[in-house]
Image 1: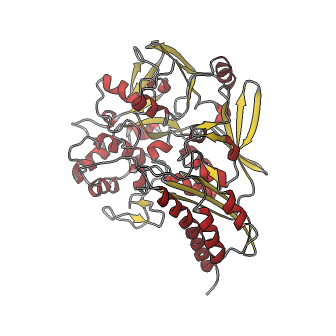
Image 2 (image 1 turned 120 degrees about the vertical axis):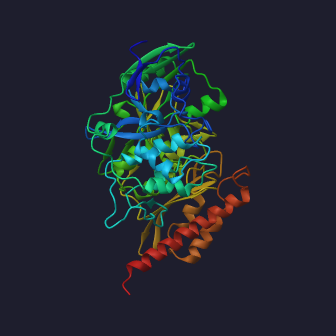
Image 3 (image 1 turned 60 degrees about the vertical axis):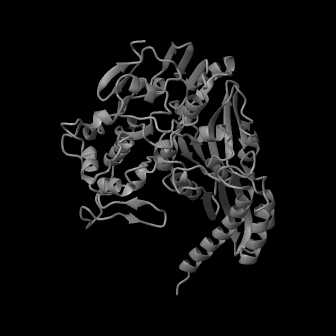
Amino acid sequence: MDHIAVTVNGQRRPLQDVAAHTTALDWLRERGLTGSKEGCAEGECGACAMLVATSDDAGGTVWTAVNACLVPVAALDGQEVVTAEGLGSPDALHPVQERLAEAGGSQCGYCTPGFACSMAAEFYRPGRAARNGAESGESGDSGESGESVGPNGFHLHALSGNLCRCTGYRPIRDAAYALGDPEPGDPLAERRHRPAPEPRATRFEGGGERFLRPASLDEALDVLRDEPDAAVIAGCTDWGVEVNLRGRRAPLTMAIEHLHELRTVTFGDAAVEIGAALSLSEIERHLDGRVPLLAELFPQFASPLIRNRATIGGNLGTASPIGDTAPALLALEARVVLVSAGGDREVDLADFFTGYRQTLCRPDELIRAVRIPLPLAQLAAFHKIAKRRFDDISSVAVGFALDLDDGVVASARIGLGGVAATPLRARATEALLAGRPWNLETVRDAASVLASEGTPMSDHRASAEYRSVMLGSALLKLFRASAAATAEEVPA
């Protein structure tokens, strides 16, 4: 297995004596790289953050921050990783580490290496630039979206997946906003101008388990046909939780996130097709706002650390009733393309979920793509109700897509999450809205119906009554926002 290795902080390290379920975090710490910490083991705290060299789709490299606790180290075969230890040393601090120290951005220090890695990813982000006229030390802007940007172009929500319990976030923000540009000769900055490593086919056995990264989609489908119980992984944001907290140990783990057929975005006359193995961050970059409903969803989905790995196919395939992509895609009337060794088939997303964490996908099938029909609805919005504004799980999520014709609702599609065993369409509310004027009376009638959709339950996130109230209020919020937008369009 000497040929299976990961380059860590510039040093090639063979993957020896590891099981297929071993996470990158455990592997790094076992090799003395203990800067990365385990705080939650489910991708919520960011204490384990590391940098991975990924493609910028233009022949260069982007330093991407991800949660080491969720990624199987075998999935990093042939890749380049930088940990907090690789950023700098006690005698030669990295600019990020230096600014954190100067601003008092650390107390106990447990979370600091993760913050440093996430901050470094933003430090090296292509296109980050100081705002015109901004002076060092100015506070950042925060618009209605909550997107805070410092005078140096630093997007503060690059750190929204990192939690600190003792320092307080102001000094961490001050450190982020005090960063300048990388100095000439900065090795990590210069690395961006060379191609990222290509994912390579990988096959090994360890600890009684097997790991496979197939060379082609056909090979992957043949494996599923012969071994339908294989654990299929892409972003691993769900797999890591299963391994860390529930002790899952699969005899065969197969990684598919590199397969070209699952990694394309195409814009046709009738539909937008999104590859199932693209990460949400990659999809956001490819779409560039051309699907406004998804553009609203992405910043509210977990955190950048999660979005940099989580895939749209994985989020649908886990069939969680609180997965955030499903309500939005249901409102968009998306269809799921499934593929097996026998060929493709296409199903309506509204029919895809058959029960709690159950779908129409057969054991020998993969989700190949998601298709969103065109044209898109005129009025669209995504409302997420959660205890925290960012980096949290939905109590309720609602996707809206309405077409209006001269002030009358021509059609309405509403997707719901968190109010039943599966994501679902609010069919009764859609039927009530269709053909009626888009006014407060109609909306109040529809809101009362929407509040009764699904079978919400009470749990530690919210009561059933609260969920129902939030459903109704979401439609009223949509109406007020659309009325305000219309008023702004009318000349005084």
